[in-house]
Amino acid sequence: MAADDQTRQEREQFLYPRSAYRGDFTPSNLMFNANLQEFAQRVNYICNLETAGKLAPSEAYEQIKDLWQQLQRSRDELDTPPPDVELS
Image 1 (cartoon, rainbow, N blue to C red):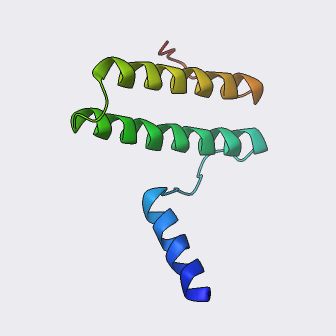
Image 2: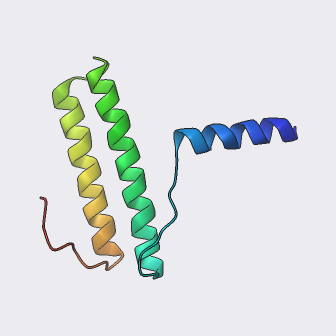
């Protein structure tokens, strides 16, 4: 049973890597960083699926656009200041 848990944890760490947060610590900055890392990971998967021909380019674009909007909403909800350059 413990070996199964360890294998599952190793698989999750491989599939969903997380980097330590090194910025100015506030709970909202930490949460936004986690959301940003998840966004990057999901965009990576979508790009790989599109490159492999498993996902149409238009569908990949729509999914990434939706993820971007979710990330912007999370930034607004967390009251995190926007970056100097707006990418929308």
